[in-house]
Amino acid sequence: MHERIRGEFRDAITIAALARQAGVHPVHLARTFRKRYVCSPAELVRRLRLEWAAQQLEAVHRSIGEIALEAGFHDQSHLTRAFREAQGMPPGAYR
Image 1 (cartoon, rainbow, N blue to C red):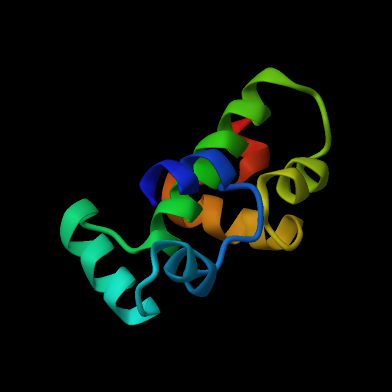
Image 2: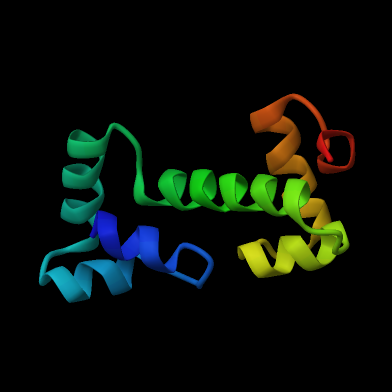
């Protein structure tokens, strides 16, 4: 599961889909995942998306809105809130 999440973090990944693939109940998957990786699948997805977005902010000169959508966030404001919470500053200041 961890590798699938790492490979597809920018796509819409659901616990239900991951659980179906693993052949287990979603609650069991979430508990087992948290015990093994000390975070939920959703937290891992969010962290990977934020790391990818930070790399894009440093490397390319596209708009923050474009980067937000490509990273898998719903819109620029969603990325901005998550980024500020994780980095202590908005994406524009980080850039």
